[in-house]
Length: 99
Image 1 (cartoon, one colour):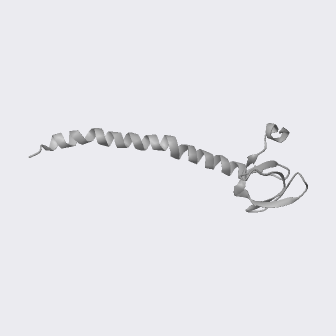
Image 2 (image 1 turned 90 degrees about the vertical axis):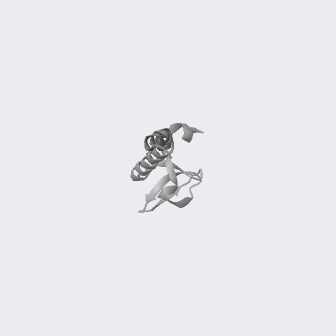
Image 3 (image 1 turned 180 degrees about the vertical axis):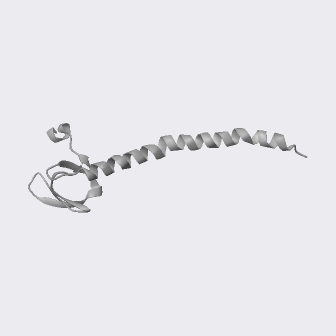
């Protein structure tokens, strides 16, 4: 009924499209996410006492002490707060500190 060569050649564009979609998904979604995770891990490893940081919930503070999985922040009012290291987004830039 069908010729074997014609059915394979008719599927090549579809296979090529699926491969192209997979490559596009990698570069648009997976790769940027991995880069963000890597940057976040570097931030967590580089935390030191006295660093000014901002948390995921928008709280600004200075690191008073570091634990294995948590950090004690000193807030502007002088109060302290214990948060997980994973909730720290990064260090405050000079511009954020002046706001």
